[in-house]
Length: 615
Image (cartoon, rainbow, N blue to C red; front, side):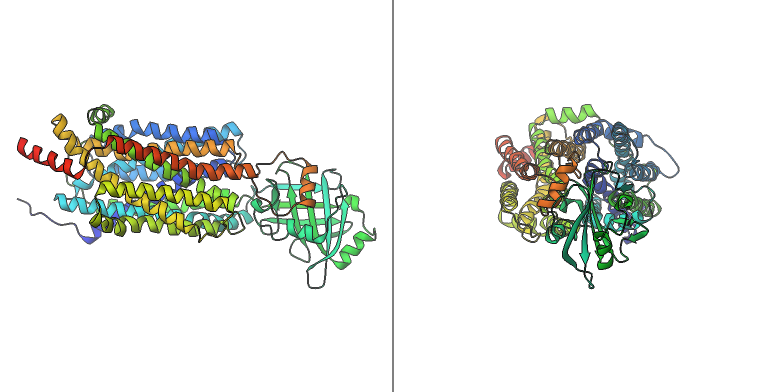
């Protein structure tokens, strides 16, 4: 008889590092694919919501089918590792393709591209995910060892998710800025003074480079501007959300300019500054503020140059986010292959391992015949939908509502805090609460904490709070509650197994737990559809006012200061959907669970006694 061997540290590390890699990939897709296609590529929000939901429903059939395929696989390398490696490589390819959408594609073409790449990404992810979690019995022996390894992998998966949540936005900005500087795909447009929608405002700079009060309209409609007004609108505008109400605002930080009048050419950054705003990337309607030294200003004012020959050449690096996501997905994909490669190289499968897989029929049969399992599954869908609605819209809240040139930094800082609170709540806060309360009472406390957190978040947003640190308070309540609920609902799901055995004379443990992954995916699909509807109804995306005519553009240049890139109604709509929407869903979850769940500690003790007596 072979001696049982405990897992080595290398094997535990190898399995855990694989979880880090696969959840980095999953979180990149789950959290940013809607934002990428809708806000950056301009795909219709409703179309994206439908695609995301359909893909999740498709997983209901894809998961068990893949389970059967893996179970019937026989190779010299085992049944799990070949699919794990194949799935990882193909999923990486699809991930990179998904975040490399062709910018020149038509609107319909982009919808088709998004649908094909995202659904195929989901198929290949399942191809890797099913064998990853199913292979535990292939290299472990005791139940305790398996439970410990599964817990380790879940923790490592949380680390992978947290890493991507924290670094994505800043990494995309850094990678995209470098790539855009050398990109041939940038927006390239030349404006000249023959265009009647071309308005130029020139501001004199003193010897120190500071703007003076000497300002003149040299081309275009005679819109009265003073230097303060120009400075307020143009100077320091780095991102489009701080410009006009939806128009594209560009400056030296994201665009290379040169302008020529007469025989003189000035290049941005030499001895002048140029700020440009246009009503859309394809429109000729443009307003320009040029800051020039005194001699150039005097030449213009004295009529020493032919203004009819003035031209401005512009090469925009507005492609920063598009290119940033492309190169970031390549880095994450490479790490994914490396980490899973370590798993496959260090884990040795047993030659004979039976893998139990549940069919769609078995899943629904188990739920229909076990009302308590059905209650928990529906509750899981509701509580996760509430959280995912907020997580899908959070980036829009920071970018378009709080805005500011440092919105990426604030978004990253908040995610770092929120992700940390979620992990700490699971590891530390839940055990502390468990000493004082039952799991049932903890469930109610956490749902209540999340509801209070959403109410506080709404009040803060409506009150005009802009400090990211103040938002840590509702972030703590929401994310701590969500983290503990992840643990509590898993405990509840385990409780329904004993209940089902008592009621139906069979133990559907594997079938019931196989539903957990699917219902979480379903919740993410529902939440994505809700978020997409919100984005579409309230027109929340960059360039949302792209139809603004030149008169409106010039009026905004002359009369308004730093405005949001989405209008007031859109701001209010975004705030309501990301706070009131989840609150309503959580209230429904609370009432439904309270009415249907009967497995108290006392009831579970009775069930345990009856099962023992039956045996």
